[in-house]
Image 1 (cartoon, helix red, strand yellow):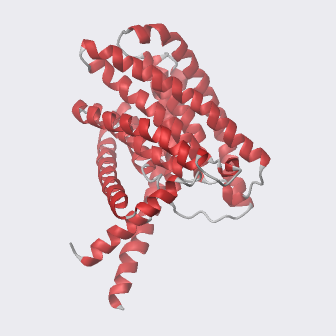
Image 2: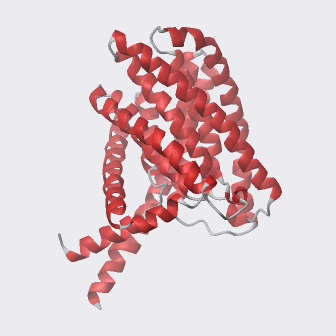
Image 3: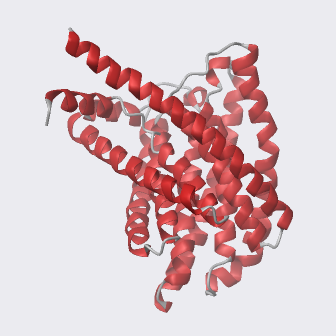
Length: 354
C-alpha cells in the first residue's frame, strides 16, 4: 500500500466519529423509501452508496479497534459521544432491510445477527462506560440527542426481525416475533428514559447555541423508527406474540407518529435559533447525517404506517417528506464530498509539494 494512502487511512480511522454510521442509516432509509414508491434507479444507486459506505466505515472501525484503542476507549468513556456507537447496530439493520427488498435475505440475516450481538453487548457496555462508570458528576449535563440512538438501535432490531419473520420457516416465526416485540418494547422504555434525561439537561443547565447540534433530530427519528417497527410488526405473519400485541402495537404506532410530527417544528425552530439568530456557522461534520436519517425515517414510517393501518393521509405525508429527505441528503452528501476533497486530496497534494 502506498505510504500516502496508508497515512490517510490511519488518519481517518483515528479520528472516526462513533456516529458516522448514520451515513449508512440515512442513505439506506431513503433508498428504502424510493424503492417503496417504485422509484427504482435512484433507489438502486443509493443502495450501492449505502453498501460502499458501510464497507468503508467497517474497515475504518476495525483499523481503529486494532491500532487506536486509546482513542476508541476515550469515545466509550464520553457520554456526549459514546451512544454514537449504536449507529453501527442501526446501520447493519437498515442496510439489511434494504437488501431484503431485493430478496437478498441471506445478507439480511447475517447483518441482523451481527446487529443483534452488537445491540446486546453495546446495550450494557455503553451506558456503563459512558454514564455509570464516570467519576465526574453530574453526567446529566452531558446528555444530548445522541442518547436517542440507543432507541434507534433497539427499534432497528425489531425492524430486521419483523422483515425476516414472514419469509422464515414456520418454526422460526415464533422466535422472530418474540424478538421483534421484545426489542420494540425495550425501545419504547428507552425512549421514555432518554427523553427524561435530555429534557432535564435542557432545563437544568445552560443551553448555548453551539449545544443544539444535529443529533437532537434523532429524538424525532427515534419516534419515527418506533412507528416503522410497529408497522412491520403489524404486518408479520400470524404467531402467538404477534396475535397478542397486534392491536396494541398498531395503536401505539399512531401515537408515536403523532409525536414525531409534533417534534418537527421545534427542531426546525432550534436550528433557526442556532444558525440564524446566533450565527453559528453551518459547516459539514459527521453529525449532520444524524439529521438526514430522521427525515428519511419519518418518511418511510409514514408510508408503512399508511399501508399497515390503512391511513392514506399518513402515507401521503410520508411520501411528501421523502422528497425533503432526499434533497437534504443531496446537500449533505455534496458538503461531505467537498470536505473530503479539501481535507484529504488537496491537503495531501500540498504536503507532497512540500
